[in-house]
Length: 258
Ligand SMILES: [Zn+2]
Image (cartoon, rainbow, N blue to C red; front, side, top):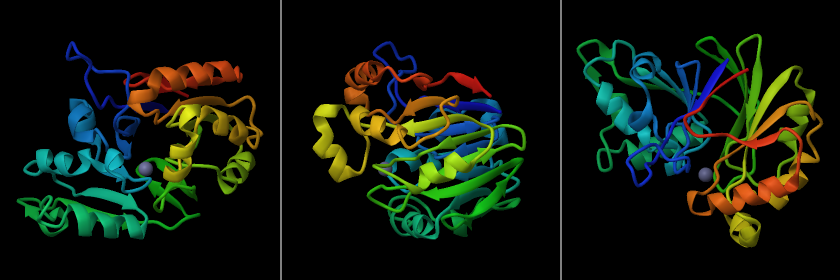
């Protein structure tokens, strides 16, 4: 299985920056999990192949590229882009984004081939198929309804926490999974901003360390994602100081294969 965190921002030379403003993970060049930078950074192959977008939650950094992605492809789509999300996330998108004020309601529009966008809801705890993948939605602890996922292609499996603070259920589910190759876990703020992390329901290196004590799969590769770009250097340093085996930063743009 191939995974890439798409770049979402540029450095001063106009090149893709390692800082992560937006969240968009592309699996096997064909399924997007979150759509923060989907329109801005997807390759030509990914733009041609991605017709399924699975959302962890409706925060802007996870959906910003979705309206633009459908807009870009509007004339050429021969199947609708299917947005897989919790019912409350779909409700938020229709009310606050695709509402004709912020952007067109694509779920009501058609091109010459038919519909350009549709929704497929899933429930917390549900397992569902998206193309060649099986996903299990696991409730996590964020300011709004948010899930993490266990993603399997039948041979390899990885898990993604989504945006979250302290969690128990997620670790119980992961500890029961067999053959988990990788875990992508969030760590948004440095230790000094513990209070901000608490009110916004995110982790710091210190709270991440406590969370990882609940994770039994010590052989699994663990990658940190969702570091707030302003605090990246500090968070990366503090993660390094944890000296946890198998724990590293997921590099933006890099292709990982498990
Ligand atoms: Zn969020």
